[in-house]
Length: 376
Image: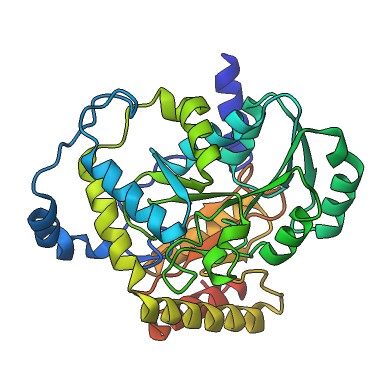
């Protein structure tokens, strides 16, 4: 048997063999369409056509070689003004993190990362040439100890974290991270806002805006394929780092750029997001209510502080079974297993959306209660 077949067999035996799901038709607790714009795309087609006409469907070259730049430049200009930083578009959050972190991780650099950062950040760090260290999730005391011991030995140190963590839905202590960063002259703070963009902040610009720390974070990563219901990502940073990443991030230099038509769509969706303050409040309200109800049901503290709410199963087999029972009830919630989460912490990851109301979420809670009681 080929070694790859042996690995596949092992994954199957451990209930970790994945496949692309069929089109699902139940209540959507899977997607990252937190602000409901993705499900409303048909409402915006007429406005899109009137404003942008018929921009090209393909860039046909990398951004550095591309002839048609109007839509990309316009989007970046809007983002520059929103963030008060220089922004650079990339094709995905994965491209942004692997490109930026690998480029920044030159010899003489130490990257100190939270243990629960996204796989794209881990891969970006691995591709670099600097040194690495990790601190236990959101453990600021451990981060301080690492920096006190090691920071002075490096030309540059980068603290890397997420603002809203994608599997537990909890948030990083940004104010404390900024305070720690400011103690050292050679430390930068790198924050991935993938799951905060659109959801937090007066204009939906993320947890950095919500906490008033936009100017204190050196590198902000945002993906546009979640709450923004578009595609691509951007990096917001200083003029110097913008120029450096543009020149040194391989995922930017050597990838065909996003289509101009997508850049135009992203522009429209971000404009919509900025004005959705009432919808953001609704999402925060129902998320807090659901978390509280889940805690009462399970007797277990919910770590989430956001619209991402984990329901722990304890094993891959149980997570699969729970997802199956919910699907039979008309609720789509897929199981999360190793290596996405650690063994023993397998769970359902529920993504709440502004389109949801308490009545429908109450049905979800009722079904979960029956599952926990082994009644369905």
